[in-house]
Image 1 (cartoon, rainbow, N blue to C red):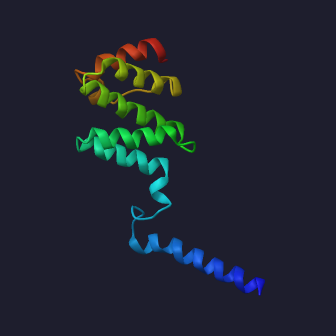
Image 2: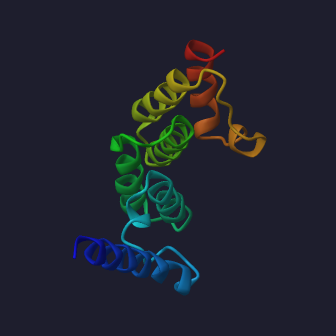
Length: 132
C-alpha cells in the first residue's frame, strides 16, 4: 500500500509541474512567480512601462528575497536608483547606487545609462566614493 501511495504522489507531482511545460511559459506557474529573477523581470518591465509604484514593489521584493543572487540585487538597486532620480529624490538615488556598489564595486552603467543627465552625475559621484 505504501508503494502505491508513493507512486500516486509522484504521478501527481509530475502532472502538476508539467502544466507549465504545456503552457509553454512559466508566467502562470505558482512556483516560478515567486523567484527573485521573475520579480526582477517584472520590476524592470513595470519600470519600462512607467509604472514606478509596481516597479518599486517588485524590485524591493527582490532585495528582500533570501535566495536572490548578487547580480539580481545589483540590478534591483540600479532600477530603484533610476526611479528615485527621475522622481527628484537625489539622496535616495545616490543611496541605491551606493548599495549596488557595495555589493559589486566593479558595477558600471551602460554607456547610454551613464550619459543620462539626471542619474549619470549621481552614479559617477557614488562610483568615485564607493566603487573600484
